[in-house]
Length: 127
Image (cartoon, rainbow, N blue to C red; front, side, top):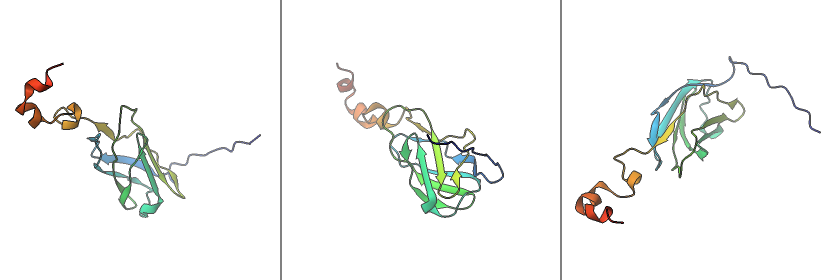
């Protein structure tokens, strides 16, 4: 049987998130996101960022910010955010999340472009 060890949370040494910009991005991916906070590393190779179960590759980092670019997110999922810094630990996200969205005007929302619909609207209304 394995013995469980106690884990102690020490706020002064735990990396913590204070903001995310932008807060929303398209489900097709390609949104560059910058997370800001304290206790970050400036070494991009130390980061693993997972948003809604999808890796977000890191392109830049300072001790106060980290930037990554989203991948596409198929289907509906609960919004989650995990930022891990190798050798430091998991960043406390303090309830701050990035959310994937589909805007009404986005072609991917309707699987047809507005241009196509305007050209032949009756085609898309038939059963």
